[in-house]
Length: 352
Ligand SMILES: Cc1ncc(COP(=O)(O)O)c(C=O)c1O
Image 1: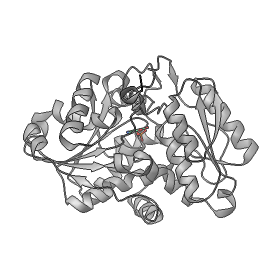
Image 2: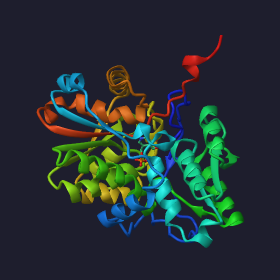
Image 3: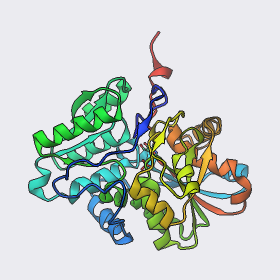
């Protein structure tokens, strides 16, 4: 998993290995890597929506005549870049935080993430006035770190390896009794992420297709569940960087890929698909579309220019997928989840 979530983040060139299961957490057992159970249902998404309603933004759905004309489709953009914390991640984190029993919640929450999930969990914890511990590897983007701190999280630094992150998070969990909130395998997180597609479909009515980015698979998993329930004939697509195409490869092989050397500007999409998330992709027949970074960059520029909205690469990739496969979506009503807008703007506004 990596979620540095900004353009200026250093590219990872490390081997990302499959998660090894850790000790049980106070309330929700972490899903097993080999045998995922308890897949979230649509009822869980509806419950999540009620739980987070007082805290999360109901983000707008925007249209653009010029982008419709360019793509030859009717596009409905769900603007999660305008969500609190700048990404859909707040939905899942908030649902996880508000799902905890009071006595458990008081001990706090912990995660390891240098990007959008870390910030989202910190913010969600603040809405419940409980401690948030965020394990951040050395070398993380300073702007991101500042954001996590600004939301009041207790930051724990560690070496920039997945093993170091997991060990540090586990140590914090044991020392504090905090509940581990995994960024994409936690069923409460997946259900929370599904509320974005639910809102979109309730606003637009049935769509022909829905496209969302895939990293660990929390967003696409929740989106697929919501879509099947509300618009059963909608085809669900996951946009994935060609340089981190483990979900694509996993679907092709019908077996989850557990090693990857990611090479992409999409910082939030560098991690491996989770086991429970892979099961959802298969169950809901999600088609994964690998997209080159050059296509993502071009799409990001178009979104900035035409929508006047700041989106990050991990988000623009969904629109890039539509443009790349224009013929597939021609004349169709398509929903696109613009998942986040956390771009490191320091490079643009640095004083000389
Ligand atoms: C902006 C953005 N979009 C998409 C994703 C992918 O989400 P998931 O890991 O749930 O697939 C992330 C993950 O960090 C993200 O930050």
